Length: 168
Image 1 (cartoon, one colour):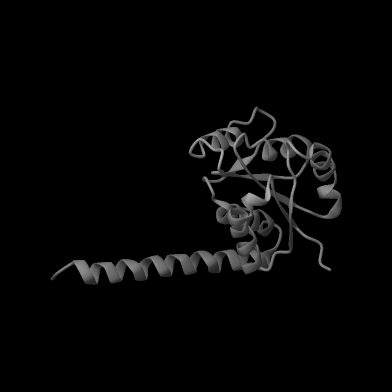
Image 2 (cartoon, rainbow, N blue to C red):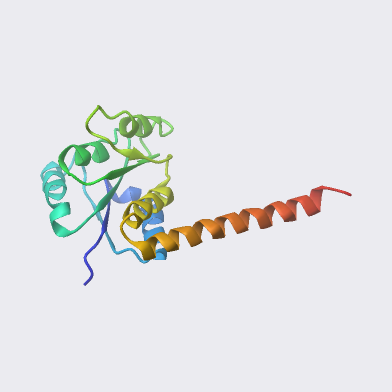
């Protein structure tokens, strides 16, 4: 089995539908990853063990998604030497997601967490790929091609819209 380079963790199985977007993009770029539940509040011993050992297992980037109080990304970042990408999740007990956003975004000095948009796990996956691509030329080429594809798709949509709505 290939060692995972990225670890996707979430506070609860209810976060899985959002966090699956990160897994999908990592699969698209053929980046090996693992995915599991590590709750800051319900499994604190597991959180500490995971955070202390992930880099020793070869993981290079951690994507941590959490809703509500959303302590998971920050707690992991306070322990692990790895970059942590936080995904705030709008959960059933959330205040429109703002509690999660601010809990992840407003980290104290010395404990950085890169934070993506509410439910933005796809961008978290892309950011993880880009971090890994800094030392992997083939992966960097895939990222460049992906961005070229996004550009081409946007230009095609613009042409269709202009053709439909702009009269000569």
